[in-house]
Image 1 (cartoon, rainbow, N blue to C red):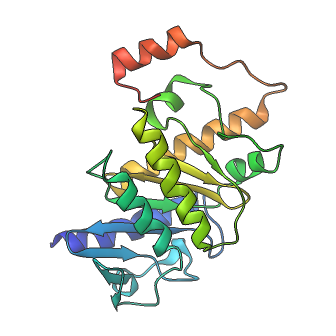
Image 2 (cartoon, rainbow, N blue to C red; image 1 turned 180 degrees about the horizontal axis):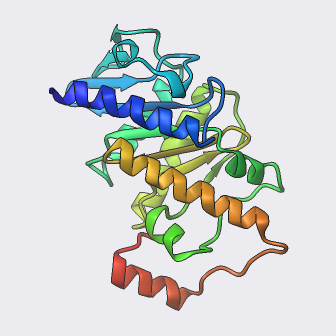
Length: 221
């Protein structure tokens, strides 16, 4: 099985898993994979629970579509993420975007610079900082520019990020494989759920506790 065929199968597997567990609904969300010579991305208005490997959009390295159904409009944002993350995470191969309920709910509250504080050790280790991007319409080029700027800002200060939160829309997460990116999304959404379940503003982990996570597990916080 070729690397591209494996990527197509994995995108469909991850999409179905996210849909069946309620991380995405209807035709919301998209998944892309960076290949050696281009990209695969879910088609526009496709339901992630019912993807066809043969119909995934295929694009060349310049973002021009060469096969499959029409690419999601968010390919421009995904390509900016791949390009911006390359300086800090050269192995980034997958971007996932969802409209995960608890993450979006947090952005309906008073605006904050980051979606969540360091509430749990696994959030610190597996997700890290998640800057909030102010609202732009879906597909707006300004949102892609803002995301690229945040990736560069955090990376330049030694805390590379694996996720951003588009206000009122949902998170974008990335990692070296679809399965690893999904794990980041799962930890992010679970932490957002815990935050919303808390009766009052929870205290974050202290600096000594975070420093221990850096020393022991290489947390990038």
